[in-house]
Image (tube, rainbow, N blue to C red; front, side, top):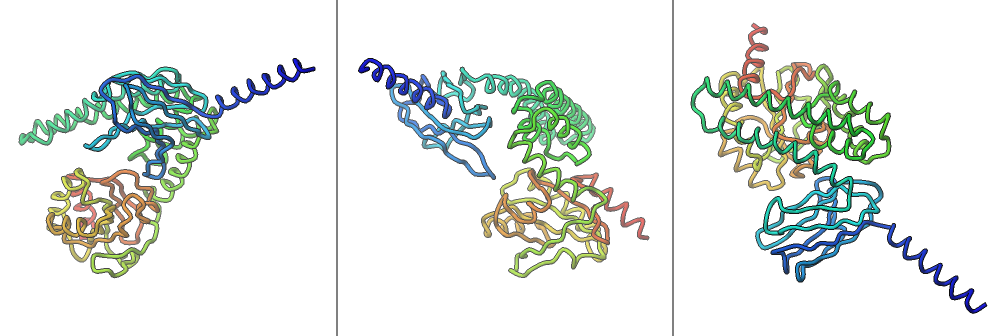
Length: 369
């Protein structure tokens, strides 16, 4: 009988250990140049870091553990006196992940033990080639003063951008049953896309992969895209202007209105501002108005940027950064982003910038006589 109880308790202990092992993921690392650095494994939710575990590198080693409800993107954050950088790790709740590399180098982390992480890294390695090519072209565009060269560069940028989109869709369709597919579609493809572009791909994924937090996020995004599609009435809102007064978007009916989502900290926004200033100086007035919606958090920085850039039009903000209520209402996930409304408050164009924006507004005003 005594031997029976010994075997029984040994069996219970083995089950307990197995259950504990399966209750979450674990990360162990053997790295160089990392001693005394803080490392965190974190999720990203609503623009905020959610730390799951923290460790300090000692003798080139650290261990991190966590528990997640479903497969998702996690981030190994490496923190030092200069701030932090991160390494993306797509994981589920059962992975035993091993990390090797040099913590002082940008791209020297080898992640082993997670098929999901390996698949995402395969995608990311190829996609980064497209991204780096785009960055190089934009840098050349910024430094060129030759209009013909600029036109040629813009054509190349459009081609590379289309090639990147084609690669994303090919990857998503090939791996439609993987939880990585909806993540990639949401984070790498959906920005700047319209409802009719995104909905068919979403439907393909739902038919094969219907249990993902990223599909829920995509569905929410689609709902907002549908309500802010060209031809739909612009959603109503009231927000506080620079004088602390409430401004109602409905008060601008009777004019063409450009809603311009921007922020003082957004370099592409600040770079586009001179084009918008030139347009406003040319045609702003009785028939055309601009309403800037800022995703700033710092009131002084917001007002200083308005003054520095000479933005003489209307401005509102609730100073909630990415949680700005108007941005949430309009489904804004990247800036600059614009919505052009007709005199009845109907959305007639989106995301126009530069000469395309100027030409569209001129065309509308010319038709008014």
